[in-house]
Length: 267
Length: 317
Image (cartoon, rainbow over all chains, first blue to last red; front, side, top):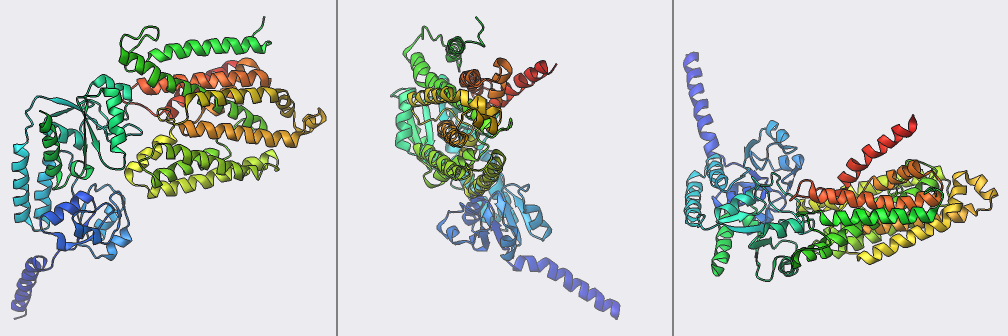
């Protein structure tokens, strides 16, 4: 009899184990701005309990409690939110190991290329059990990506990551890949550094046809005049919202389409 | 005629060497451009609007740092003293980084912040000027640590891109000086002039304060003036180019090894030697991993240390 009872108890426990995770919703920490955007875009926004600095999109994300910055997590503040899962940029970030030992499931999303954004959306969808919406979103983004004219004649471009010191994007960077996918040739694409500091002379020698300036924290008008002075009056200067181009989230295609549209105005 | 005996000969020959070096370095960059005959309009604009202001800034800043270093070494009676030892660079960095945080899209605000920061630092240091060398040095070291702590705090609070900018400033950056070149050259000439006027008193101070006083030097006034002069020169250099290490520490010693320790020669030689070293370092920073650029502070050490150690060994035997 006792064996029978134990068997039943075992079956019951098994059922509980199988059922309970599906019933209880995850409590998710979005520990990078792009991860936050992805979670909201795949319908997991209601499960997000905490975020980090610069998680500013969509509007609802601005109200989330903050637990530090993407590269500096306040573990105590994070744990106080009783999370069950955290989407992180880099698992080597200090504090992430501690979160993991405290029982938080860690999922890394560190897109280095445009294609990684789509696969990460699917991956995060799977982990948070919003696979259906994530797949829909990823497929939609893929279609838009396929429509971009990456095969056009290569127009050379200088991407001004930062004006002072003058920084640009080197090889194997996300920005480099974004430019490549819309048919642009990064003039410093063969520099094996992530954010090389370059000299104005080097930019003049590279003869870019277009300069792209992220509109964040700089005087775009002043920079436009500056580049016209050194690269000639006919240089095309395009400014773009950096959150749409640097941030490997669901709005990336908005940024890429915007850039392509700006390019087509001329050609 | 011996170059070590005649200051005018020393001055003219160092001036000639500096001009020749500057002329050669002017040609170096992304492409070699012959400074005598630039082949296009763009080439001459690169020469006269990009390269030459930067070279002259490097020369003036390097020279002023070396002069300030020489003065601090005699003022504090310590061979390890350098222009940043009393925390002027630290307070300037605090000023610069604060203005980066407050006005992120402004170019001149950083220099203004650095200048104000430097003078706040100087004001604090001056209130300790009545202390003896050892105590003044201690106060300076503690102040430097204080400014460093504030700086860490600011950097921890800055967003990531601001941090890149703050580090670039702290490693020295000659490409974005907002101070006009002529004003820096003028400051360099004034600094050297003041130094030469004081050189005899400095030689006496080197013998010790009591000896100097018995030789007719008003030690208290001299020390106060020297502290103000060296700090002001440091403040100008830091405002123009951020913190560039090593030049101020080693160039005066290098010049003592080459020309003896009388201040007239040391100061003339340091003003030119520091300038030439920084011009070389900055040209290397622009060209060695071209098209990318290195922080100039790295190269002053990489170029200066081997030369200095070699001279130490050679003189040691």
